[in-house]
Image (cartoon, rainbow, N blue to C red; front, side, top):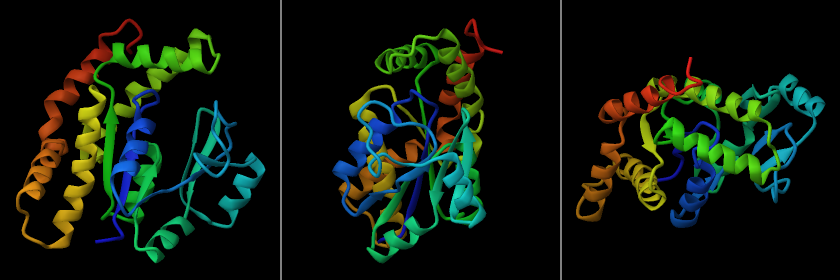
Length: 233
């Protein structure tokens, strides 16, 4: 079945990009929605691959023409998903993955409540800080205030977990990839109307374990790690 819209969100440093890339590699008939942003490219990023990089003025003009399905300003940069990507994916008979933040998720869910939302979380505040420091070093950014700002933003973002359908804790990469695939394929199985058997049942069981109500205890533990850290508020 085509036409399913998957929303994947995560605090910066949670490993979302790696998971999404692996998902697209392993799952057929799935396309990635390339967002527009006003931030500059990082590392080896190329225009039209990870993002469409445009100026703030160009972005504001697109807002004025009501061309966005959703958009938000994060860390002084705009990010947005153009409406046309949904139409183009539907024409090709593909499911679509949106890599957007918590603000964008609420906007999309209001317009497309049938969308499947997945929140990727780090296993703890300590692990996220370690990942952020590695990323900052690779970007040649060594300002402590940047790392602390991202940590504080992550804590606030995680508090939005009740709005999501699935929670995926990215601890062990291979296991997280398997779980993300199970969620995507499980939703396809449920919406296909066919009776699940064998491998389908296994996928559904893994996906169900990631449903928000089944992850409440884990989420509380992760939030507690942020609140108990030296920089927690």
